[in-house]
Length: 611
Image 1 (cartoon, rainbow, N blue to C red):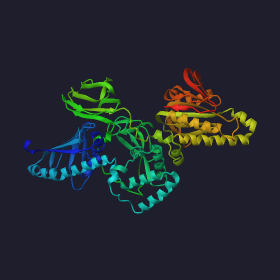
Image 2 (image 1 turned 60 degrees about the vertical axis):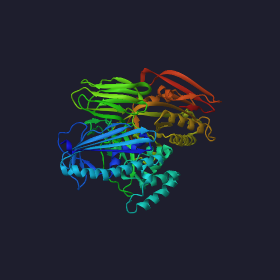
Image 3 (image 1 turned 90 degrees about the vertical axis):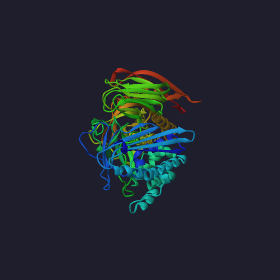
Image 4 (image 1 turned 120 degrees about the horizontal axis):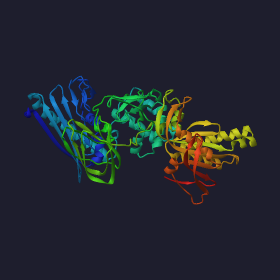
């Protein structure tokens, strides 16, 4: 049997660093397509499926090979690998390991393959296939990645145009004219059209506008604005992607918010989970099928890039010990064992321990804490009598994801897609949202003095000023209540800025009476998103508290809750007439609690805000 094991050992020197190469090399779905492997599909080989293992076969009429794939292992950004256990075909086993060794010239790629053949014919033919065909494709793909990185290009920027559907080019040009007129951002429009015309199906199946804008070095909100207008005019479509709260794998794709129904079942965890507007509901885009049809073929299902939040994943047998090398971003991490409850908290900082050993015993992990450096010497040991999958993952979700909380708090989205609401009766949690309530000081006196007709005109004009200021700060008006406005924002900073802009315009408006004085209250916290009157509305204590705060504001005042004032650093401008008062108050409906608030009085000049 030993004579049927073949080992292929190749090296290539590249000029890019491991950190630069990792996103491309670890994207095994893209990589396998580049080296012309056939697409794969889940396959029910047997009912005896072990945790973390995947049953697969080639999605090709030319091959009937089926295999069980052990869990991918990786140490970001230096190593990844996988082993396949074939149930039929020419091979019994195939193991791949890729190492990225940094050096003065960049990175030495060490690519190894171990193949256990099933018969002598395969044993003699496999070297011809791997050394002359597979190796050449690998070298070409690696060098192309190196060139992309050096030129700071995305993969699509070195490709010819993709095939569009009949009439697709004409529709693109019609959309270009309309988008240029509506958005006045021709550069972004041109880049978007270039992207959907050249990028591979893998790239355009789930487009993240934030990820593209970061690469293009353009403002995220401007790029998102073009994406939303492009969807409205038929260039793009969007989907709501629902990710598991635990393993963060994509579980559902909904065309509208109204299709979301809790709880959602995760096939990987075999558990139900609830979604959250801030974390696991992401809005992604793809070309409209009248422009371009997208293949759903997948070339790898469980590779490292499918779980970009995981920095280390290791599959250890009983008694096995691993010495690992990784590079971690600073921040909070969680170490846990796949399929087991319990975890350990890991903080990565410059002052952390350089050497750390983690031994897993039968009791498992129970909230242990550790602080390590960004480049630790990490040792994992499995002291149990079962195979275990160790996972070290970031606690924070990706900052490049466009979440439901982000997009539904935009006035532009609500204006363009006013039918995008939750199903009636559905309540979705929102971990973090900023609510602002505004009101007019002594509006009753204004009505009495100027009459209903004049006063109503003033109130409507003040609504228009507020809407513009709120939209400019990436917020949205949820509803108006008499002379009051309820607005939603992703951050306290934007809410505060919106009030300042509106206050300045109203104060300097020549046609407004001196009686038209704006006041507001801002609070930040968790709430529930619901469908009320065919609109996305918010309920909960955070909303109730924000609505009560405005009652403590006098004319030209804004009241900030403690959570908001802690998030902002408000300092007096050079010539500002500014008065700040810290109070502890009881709010209506919360009589048994004391709330720390900051009341800020504005006069003739604005505040300078430092965040």
